[in-house]
Every structure is written in structure tokens, then in C-alpha cells.
Image (tube, rainbow, N blue to C red; front, side, top):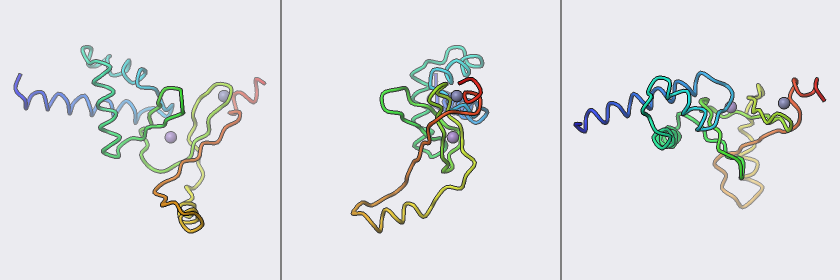
Length: 133
Ligand code: ZN
Ligand code: MN
């Protein structure tokens, strides 16, 4: 296989991974993305999916959401926004509230730290789980 062909295939894989991620709002794991991508590219490996996810994150096209010890979740929405994580079903929801740009400035002014970004994850019960509990 020529290197240009390998490069082309890489681009096709990356595009599909991005498309899969942009078409869901569930903030999936790499395993879930892998299962979806495999339907179109059966011989793709999980390693390739991971590599492309890392690359897409470095390119600023997606966000990686790390939650300590649990698996990373991926977000096709690269714009700053807040999340709500349900304590019961562990689903991750996007919050439709404005991103507080002033918060970085506040911490920059009031602490010795040089802030570049902030992330806020709210926790509690989602509407579905409020009905059940
Ligand atoms: Zn829930
Ligand atoms: Mn999100």
C-alpha cells in the first residue's frame, strides 16, 4: 500500500469517527464509537479509533471528558459548555446555560494561577431518574 493511500484511508476513518460523535449527544465512550464505526469499516481496530480520537481532540474538533477513574467520554461539541451528570443513570447531559467567560478572569485576578479554561460538571438527578426515585 502506498503512503498516500494509507493517509487517505486515515482521513476517511477520522471523518467517520467525527461524524459518529457529532451525531450523538450521549457523550459516548471510545468502545461505543468503535462499535458504530465498525459497521462501516469492519476491519478498523480499537487502537485506530483511540488514535484518531486523540488527534481530533488535539485538532480542537472534539472534547475529551475525563472523570477520574472511569473511562473517558467523548464530546463532538467542541464549544465551551457545561454538563450535568446524573448520579443514578450516569448519563451526561449538555446544559443550555451560558458559559461564564468572566470566571476565568475572576480566578486570574484573585489567585496566583494563570487560568486557560474551566470546566464545571453539575451532578444530581436527571428528569427521568427524578420520576423513578
Ligand atoms: Zn438519570
Ligand atoms: Mn457536551
